[in-house]
Amino acid sequence: MTDPIKPERLPDEVREALAYINQIQGTIAAKDAELATAFRMNEMQRKVFDDQCATIADSLTRKQLADWMIAHGIVTGHGDTVRDLLAQLGGAFAADRATVAAKDAALRAKVDRFLAKYAECEPYLVSAFVQSYLAEELEALRHD
Image (cartoon, rainbow, N blue to C red):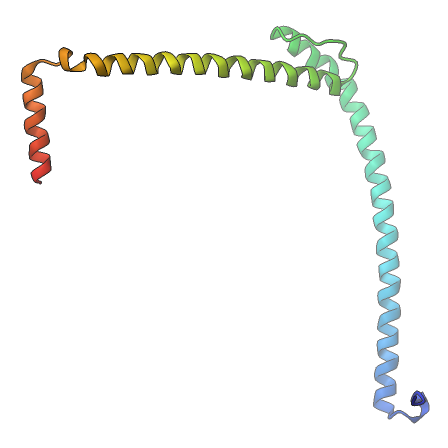
């Protein structure tokens, strides 16, 4: 095992570079600690701010939201908080979406049945003149 080189034996330029690197490392460590402290303070302040905003928003908007829901025929349940009201509103929207989806499926089934019946009856509904005209046009398109 070799002995480490003693700093006194290094050239002046290397010693100066090492001193500068040590200085930069110290500065970086100090800035890193500063940033970590600032980040923790910012997180604590953000939480306090969020809590205050939530309290203010809840007291201001809970009644407005409940009034809107009642005006639109949506039950509010107990609705002690905005979160409770939003949960109730989300449930009402989900129920409405399910109802709309069921009605849409039923309507699509009716349209599909109508189109199937129309396809069966179409040859009888279209006059011979129109059929021959369409056949000529189709034949012309095939040759183009």
